[in-house]
Image 1 (cartoon, rainbow, N blue to C red):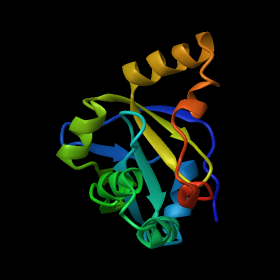
Image 2 (tube, helix red, strand yellow):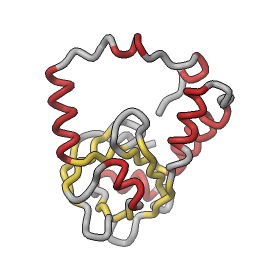
Image 3 (cartoon, rainbow, N blue to C red):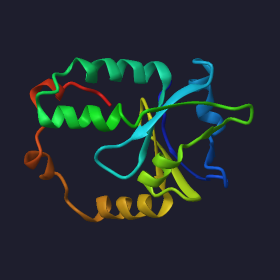
Image 4 (cartoon, rainbow, N blue to C red):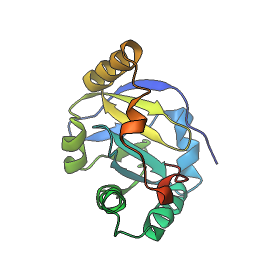
Length: 156
């Protein structure tokens, strides 16, 4: 399984297509260019997974009872917004309009490697978040918003 690293600035074209950088294409080529794009439930960005990696995450999410409000919300948002995409001959994927709207994507974007996935950010939003993280101490936030025990081992 490929690991995604690094930050790449890029642009969406007028049709909402994104050219996946060459260094990341091999991870998707192993799965016939199939991948999943969904929303991030914590930030206004998109998550891009190789198809098989997403299937494992979806199985884990599906196994969690939806009686817990936070677990139900996670399933509704992540699985409900998940869209399958396939790399075209030029290494591009079409980002659906609803997902572009969610993340505020118009043209200038940033692709951020996060191990098992890529995150796609509007460039302005990414720069703002990066500065916030560099200037603020957010370590105490985790204590205010604990995950249900069933989700503690879930790896997104």
